[in-house]
Image 1 (cartoon, one colour):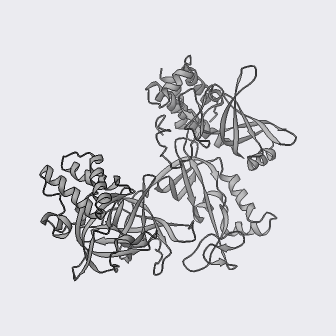
Image 2 (cartoon, rainbow over the protein chains, first blue to last red):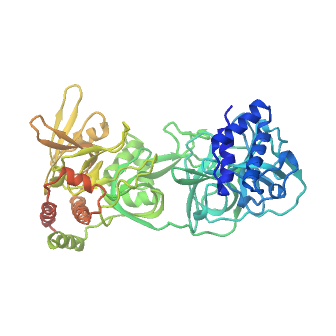
Image 3 (cartoon, each protein chain N blue to C red):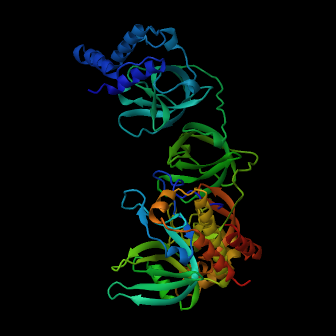
Length: 415
Length: 200
């Protein structure tokens, strides 16, 4: 049996109080209690912690042998204040239940109080009563752990979970997108854009934002989950905030969201990039879209929609996906129909005609558009998200004689 | 876009960022003598070190395609020469770049072309160096695009020279090691002469 994790946890508690304890020593104590004396692991942990607390004269740390409890430990804590490594008692409302990802986990979800919310995990071995969504519980002696940089409340065999009667109104504090941290977050945002789903279990993904910034979101297919409408404002309670490659994303699987009145001016809406078009991606040009209300996904050549299957009644559209490069940075650009029409001079009707009267069909439109804009200098204005640029307007760069003169002076002038 | 910038620092651990296409005149690209790989992975990008102090994994160039040749028996590939006012770019497209190869096959010389591609440094048996650009895409462009590219490339080259003079380039040590005798003034002169050829 491995005691290093438990020892680490105990050691951390004391190091937070300024006492360093050799984890090897703690491990030895634990091993002796558990292996020689058959003490339950949770009880052994408690006992070793208490022994050390007595030794260092730190009464706040001990956990009061098996139930009686010292006031400090049994006192309710605010969810907002807990830190990894602590043993805590909290009272809160289960605001979300997730489907468990592993057989060793009985339940997981989010529990919230008036100060904040935290993810919880109930180990299958904990034998804890099953918790219900929207019910209040008092959870005693749970451990705050850290998993992938996010604080987590672990309910183990030494934790007691009791339903309590509570009817406090729980209004989560709404954060700005720019203030989000990995964990749980509630935001009021506008849906900026939706992306084509890349996975069959995915219901929707895209970008939401407010005045302070933008963030990617994802909704997985689960009963009762609805898609967000692009351009609408939503209040989202208790979304999971995940971090990947130093970028945050919102997972709405746990969240409650409702459409809201009003509008939000989303930040980053006015970027201006001048560069050369260095690549036009497949899927540009004339495309077919799924006609099902609210879907609008691009169909494959066989008119296949990833969600609604074969759709012979498709709708034609124009778009260009590609890369715009200013020599320092490369932007993934997405041009919608109006922008494509004004930049290439080919409108939707002309494109349809080209496709119908040409042996190459829709490819002909792609090739013509490619030959018109690939390798050309353009200026794109629009919203920048990471290195994506959602282009609102776009024009060709014109030769500027003033720039020519300035550069001649610069090349010839300086030493 | 103000100075030589931070190509390497922008790369996030584990994340993918497309390498930007550097603007470089033929007269500078042919002076490259050092190529290196960033990281140990097989898929890690390789860079040629431009003598003005910046690494380049990809280039965007515009010039006149003056000559093209079909080569190879089994594995057909195309070679071409693209000329700018400072010199000649050697470009090639093989069966691994089928679209670029078909494009190159189709274009009739002479024509202004815009080329996006990856530079590679080779050494011939007699010790001479050759930089060849493996084409990712090539299209026919107009004279205005060529002129815009000249301005863009002039500015980028001057930016790199200035950044190196101020010690702002992240590859300063590499430049010292591999181009010890190089005088940036010659590239400034090259830029001036190139600009002087644009007729407005």
